[in-house]
Length: 189
Image (cartoon, rainbow, N blue to C red; front, side, top):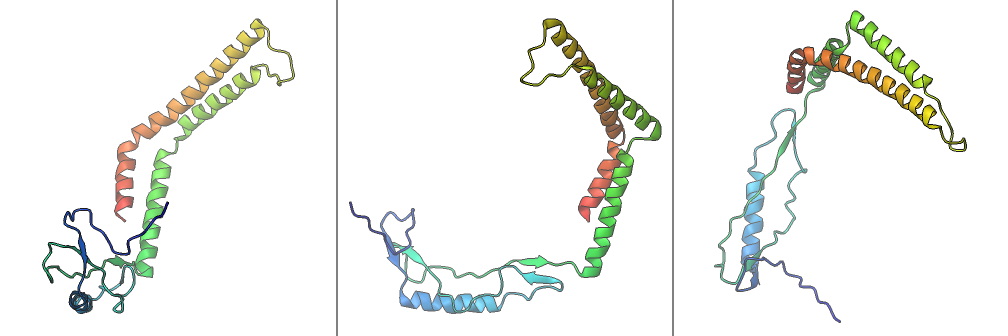
């Protein structure tokens, strides 16, 4: 079994086959792309051209359908620019963003009375989980009574854990309007 590779670029929409670009087309395209690249606007202050400078020595590559007329193509050159914040502005934006994050953190922090209730629920959860009997894999299996006791203790612990999560989520939901505004403000920075 033999395989051969075609060195020419193929186009899927050429029903009549593909032809290579003529030397005149390649010469014109190289000159036209170089002229277009030279005419690209200079980067604005604090920005740089994405992808580096244009390579004027690069030879354009074309392939045409057999039905295409000679010289019937449009050369193009383009490039994007990336804005780089000046150090002072970047530092100012960083400080503002961090201040916004701190405000969000403070708003979502439980008030002292709710924090006390939260800590109490965590303590009750811990006590309930610790009340459940434990066994290692090498120990004999629990009796049905022991398993029922473990299930009750775990259910009690889960109930306290769910209550603690609900306390936090209710508080976060109560300050959501404020934190959403702060997040939107931080996102704009």
